[in-house]
Length: 158
Image (spheres, rainbow, N blue to C red):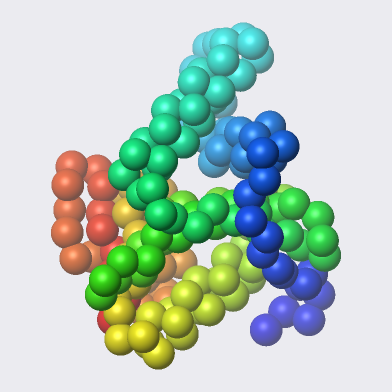
């Protein structure tokens, strides 16, 4: 474990977290958006539209999900959305701000969910795009591809 890693905690999403959550979503699209010839305003409008569409999808498909802010030493650093179902814990989204990636926070949080899944006898799943670098993290942690739907891979840990 990385001793320099900040204390990682979670808190429920609050009404005034919307701008932060949109920024977290935008950070997950930085590389992709760097390749398009849009102005900063166009990029921001695209990110906001995509974020709002994603939020609406999550509310429709996962109405009972837990939406949390990842805190690093008490400061907002990302988001973790989890839906607990009969027989399954679904990680809907785990995203850290760019500066926090690769430092072990995501592995720690996923490890806690793996332990919860083990204790409850549930499988732990997450959808990941085939081109997403986080695939390596899930594979390293022992997740396997259970299904493929176009560019979406359903990773599963049992």
